[in-house]
Amino acid sequence: MNKELKVAVIGLGQGWHHAKAYQKVEGIVLVRLCDVNTDRLYRAMREFSVPDGTTDLSEIVQDPTIDLVSICTPNHLHYEHALPLLQSGKHVLIEKPMTTRLDQALELVDLAYKKGCLISVGMVLRFVPSFYRLVAWLRQERLGRIFYIEGRYLHDVKDIRLLLPSHQWWREAEMLFAGGVHPLDLMMWAMGDINEVYALANHTGNLPELRVPDQIVMLAKFRHGAIGKVWTNVGINGGTGNTLTVAGQKGTVHADPSGWEVYLSDDIFQPPYGKAGYWRIPFQTDGSPLDALIQDVCWAIREGRQPLITGTDGARCVAVLEAGVRSYQTGEPQKVPSV
Image (cartoon, rainbow, N blue to C red; front, top):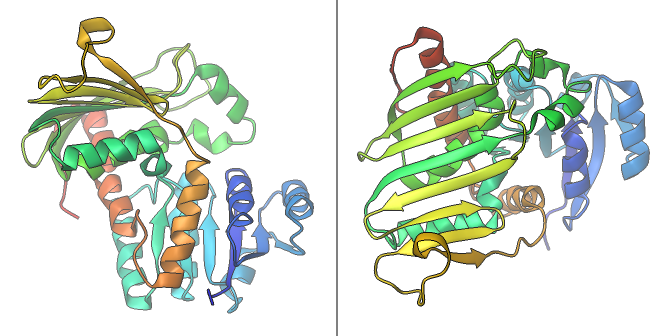
């Protein structure tokens, strides 16, 4: 019989979606919700029929019956909230980014190991079929040696404005951490470690509310020699979502969540389709990637294994993101420490 897991969620912005996802997993009992906004807290308690709610994280930390906690609070608070939860022996699922400083991420990874706890991070693009199947293709060397990979995170300015009233902290949040982490994780999952980055950033002028650049372009040098690029833009008019482009000796793939545009030099796909001989391969997205992430974390705890996305994966991304921000701030390339 599967072990029943008792779960809490803190931060009921994005955490609202976590709470909903947990209730779809068999054997999961959502026992407590936490948010400093009491209106939001009580609304979520009613919506998910959770009898216990609190504005005080320490009540969750001190509850020995809780097995797993989703941390969905603002980015800069992830470390502060994860630390006491891990110290109390709880597993944690931390929304992306894992932390906003590498030393904090490494401390959490070390603490989880000592406590026998699991950390996972909400980098959900790994659970999008068109992306995880592309990574599998690359590992099978279907495109040969890869020499270039590019990921994009584009979030229309109108959508960001809708978020700002409930996400005031975004005005100060580094957008490379807030959005660029998604394509970066995909790229590193596919290609391995990055040795060096060089980033440029500016303000589009479309989001004067932000006190940080809303556009960042970061070039990356992978350990095995490939070049990468992450384009993050939350001030763009038109165009949203995440894409991944990979160029190798045997072909090129442009991927988004709905499918691939593929060109292969060995002409497996005949006759050619569309511009420059690319074929369109649609992908069916079955369910929510967040649902899949949460199910994976719950089953990893039950089975005593690591989840698909580990704390070390989260820390590796933080190392690159931190170097990227330092690069655009100094105007100089930055080495990325090994994790």
